[in-house]
Structures are given as structure tokens and as C-alpha cells.
Image (cartoon, rainbow, N blue to C red; front, top):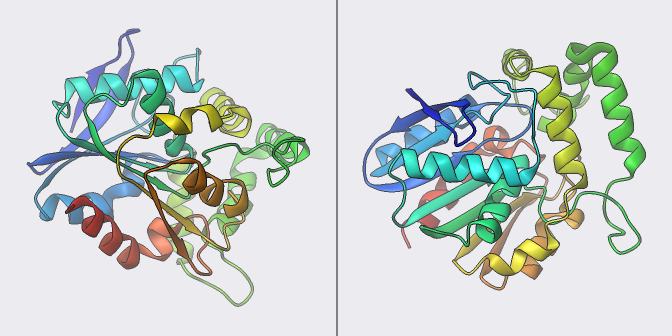
Length: 274
């Protein structure tokens, strides 16, 4: 475990496990690198150097009262790649909000040092419903999220993570203890970063970034994702990335890194081996 400095003077908490070709894991909102632990261990055991970091404002990284736009966040990713020596044939794996960092890195930093990309339950290409993006999510939904977090953030997360993992009256894909742990991780983030990043992933249009994916790209998305609907994200992303392969997990919710972890482990390791 270590901390690395960013170009604007902040510190990011980074885990580096194993050795070999680098695989950089970028977590979703509002979590931390710890959400990757199962997969980080499996990938490291398979002979790769795994790098997972807490996004600025989240987990154990610094919590500046500044920019949380995707240009800044992709610059953080660039800083991590340089500082950890992941600058040769790296695979970038972005979950949910983290997919946006991958997309913006590919365009803003010309995909430097990247051999492969993976988008899992990703917000790419565009979450917001507009006239030319009819399958997106209504702005009112994001407004309600913001209001709920300002009123009672712990209560909001208690409900949010049930949808995140597909927990229902007859479905319990994760335990109550796992839900409690996830909420505790989410509450490590600052309110500022939590709200600012929610705005960024809700409103950033990545459609122009898709052409920058010139490396083999694996897109994985659950068909029952209620948090980031597949018709607003996974399917159009795979269609817009010439090098993409789409794997749809039938019936899977958003947090499939936990609910479908063995299937995701197999698919990631198979893709990395090519």
C-alpha cells in the first residue's frame, strides 16, 4: 500500500499487488479500491501486477474541495500509471463511474501505454436522457439523488445499494453484512466529492471518446442493471467502439463484481490472457 502525488499536489491511496503485466482497476461510485479486492487477488495470483487506487475524494485518498470532472480524474489515472510503472502494455478496467475515466484517458491521453480496456457496468457512453439519447436516465432522477444525499446520506445509501446489488423481496444476492460494509465504504468519501462525482457521471457525454478506443475492449454489463441501464450504456458503448466485444450477463444487477464474481473472474482472466 502506498500514496502517490498527483500533478496538482494531492495524494492518492494505491494498492499494488503481484508482478507482471500491469492491470489497473478503477472503482465505481461511491466506493473505493477495496471493492476490487476479490478480483485483484485473483488477477495477481494469475501473474499480473494489479494496481487499484482510491479515486480522489474517496476512501483513503485526499479529499480536495476542487475539480471532480472527468478531465481531472483521467489526469489522476495518468498520474497513477506513471508513478506505479504501469506504462507498458497496461490493461485498464473501469467499473461503473470508472469506465468514464478509461474513456477519457483513451481520448485525452491518446490511450498511452494501454494494451486492453475493460468496461464493466460502465456509465459510458452517456447516462443523461436527451433528445438524441432517448434511452438515458431522466435528469429528475439525478436531482432526487442529490436531494436525498443532502438530506440523509446514510439512509440514501441504504436504499441505493439494494438496487445496486439487485436485492429484493425474493432475491438476496449479497448478505446484509455485505450491504453494511458497502455503505461504510461509501461514507468514507466526502460529501463534496460524492455529489460532484455524481454530477460528473450523470452529465458527461463520452460519445466522442469512443473512437479513441483502438485496443481490444471488453464490455460487460448486466441485463437487469437498474443503476446504469444497459440500453443507455453497455450496448451503445459496444456498438460505438470498433474493437469491442460485448458480454451480457443475463439477469445481473449493477454490482456484478460481487453478485457474479466467479463469472466475472473467468471472463477477465480469459481476456487478459490474449
